[in-house]
Amino acid sequence: MPLCMLIWSPVCALTFIFAVQTGSRDYRTFFRHLLGRFWPAFELAFALTLILILAVYSAAAGAIGHALFGWPTISGILLLMGSIG
Image (tube, rainbow, N blue to C red; front, top):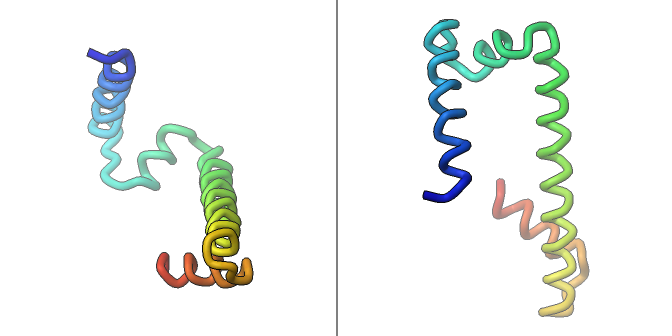
């Protein structure tokens, strides 16, 4: 059994136990109980991380479109945005 399974299986089980004990049936309630008054900071950090990841993917898509097809960089970015949308 891989090491990651030995770590993540108990983490998953503890997460489910915590959710049942606190009556958390959705994402926001779970994190309110887990993080207390700091849950908005987590939400903000999560949103900023998603924006960063999408920016990196967009830059890569623009560079790939330019390298493979000779398109302007913005074409690859817009194509990625359209396919995600």
